[in-house]
Image (spheres, rainbow, N blue to C red):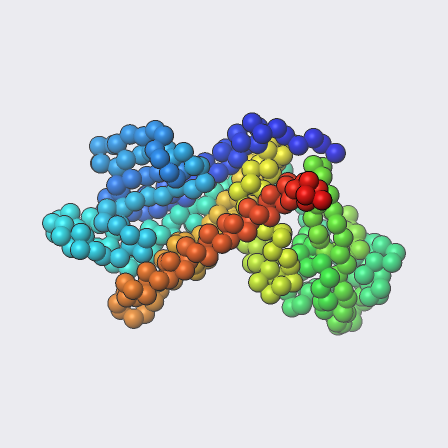
Length: 380
């Protein structure tokens, strides 16, 4: 087992992961706003009191906040969290008001809001495309190479050479699809469509219960994963051309987003514990660990965090980009915005939900670091 990195390296790694991702996220908003002629009053990386900053010739204040857990772009006229027109906005001269966020049509506002998460996805695509180009992609057919004795696969009657076409209706194109599907569903009972060996018979349904196991990484972190008990057939690494690399990167991002949606659905429905959720402290810990493993592992982590940052921000929760997009969709259908009072209450509820989630994941993170176990030992 590898020793965990110290606090200084962990903090450096955390800032090296979060800082650039927050910057490109907010830059997406900023550049889209600039494209539509919206003036930006402030561009901040970090929250809280300004540590350093300058004002450019367009009047935008670029600054660093002391708390590096996010950032924001404050567009001209954007005077409240719901971006609702206010008396102050109405009092602006017509020319100045025309350069504000609220003055733009709903489709332009939607593009500005969506640009941040989309840039995060684009960054992840480029990183994963680079890995695909440099190292190629591992491919193996969705065929059973070997069956572990006493495993769920053996109990269900799977045999070497069986081809698994789909599980619960989801097509399996590669052995990696099988592994990922099982890993995310410990204890689940699934139905697989299987073609026996080299036979030409039609696929037949096979019901099996995915096993559950605890796995530890090189730093001693434990994970609960699903296990079928089958081995991959011989795999090969396929070279990827420069033109094909972005397609591979995009496909991997789509697969990761799908897995994220599956995991979120399991948490919502109670099939997976909320204890598995992690927050900034867990990201910091993993950042330090990945940095000690070398630049490929660290850059791969940046891609994963970028995907999650984009995905989370697109959730239809008020206070997030997805919440704004949800209200813009309603506005586009109704041809008028949602009332200020309704938006205010929605954003208050969204803020309360986000604060509650932040408390929960921080509680989980501290538990993973052994704080609660240590306190229980002291009290006991």
